[in-house]
Image: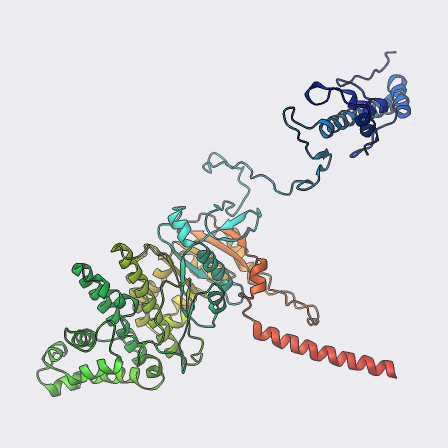
Length: 618
């Protein structure tokens, strides 16, 4: 019978050999001294244990003379010990002499579990895998994902991909300017309340601040962004009863730059015309809000003529000293040949009858709740040089929907005018190029007032220069846009969503997906995923204990990012708060409920403690 023999391509080291490793040539060809040899022999072995000479001799006999599994196992153990001894010798040589011959350097000790020492250990970062792109015909059967897995690392970090764990970065400005993934820097966010829409937008706003982009939160209703703006050193403007006023006839930032354009008369004339158009649009929108019906064509002409009379050369009103609503009402009531011509009246009596409706509406804007906010000079104008700007309108009662919508409309108009002013200065070489993010939150509150408000919001969004300005619109569901009166108004409202080149969807009900199908198609997997986020958590468990954190709903912080109008897969991601965000409390929108829970827990804890004391005493 043929005997089994052990073959090894590497020299076998005995225990004595490992102790004599230091006898090799040292640095620059010099032999090591005996002290180094003794230290090398006494070095504590790291990594897997080596076999001693007796065990190796016994295994060699078994490998040569044994049969079957015993011989194969002995051969395997000898081969493994050979590899371990070779690795130990290499590590010992590197530790004793270093890795370089020309420099007196040493490396960290290498073990089977990584390098020992600072920066050592196992590798925690896994390299990015190679990605391939091809058509569905070429990779048919090899594409296992039902949603998109690609997410470019451009923009503000939002979270991690729900399926791959890869980081997801996005903000409309960077995806438009640096990535060219979208054709306009606009974003529409849809999602049920309580699932993190505002937190997501706050993350985008915070990322914009870090990149030098100025966020303009024009009408913070709850407020959701005030604390963030205060922490980054921005400007906070309060509007409401006893807090501040906003003059619709004030030129604002756009009017303040007019004197700086004296050397450029053509540009100065253009700015004045732009300013007058914005003022007419805003006053007409406020009149529509007050009366609940559209402004007639001649009434809008009367407003325009009245403003031109107030600002005519030689008058007491200038962009620096604007009139107020009382002044506009007085000019229109006073009449004149030009105003009579606009109203189509042949005499003053006929003119007074023609302006009766407009006079009533303007009177409502100068008296009562509307007059408390709009009939006066602007308390605090917008500072476009600030890090961020937040207009807090939470002081207005929630029940006064008309007034709150009117304030939101006026704030948006003032904010867009400020953006336009910054662009004019940059084009004229009188200021740096500024970049802005305009946040239009709670859009449903304005659109729900009537069809006429859709036209006003549409005009405001179209008047703003999309260059260097990102627009973020936020609403709960598309049902808010489809609940308008006429088909024309619904089509215009849906145009807000269609013109947004990027859409982010949070938790939505199943019927909402059906409404969105004609505008933003969903795949079957995306539909199941988004609707599952809105499912309530199980109605089990106990009340929160003192100090216990309130758990979030299962779908909180989960979003789907989609671009385009086809059925291309979106990017699902989960947003997680950073440590600094948690410590600052900028996302804590349930603070009053937290205080209620803490007081209830303290009360229950004290009662439980009292009962326990009584039981002990008994």
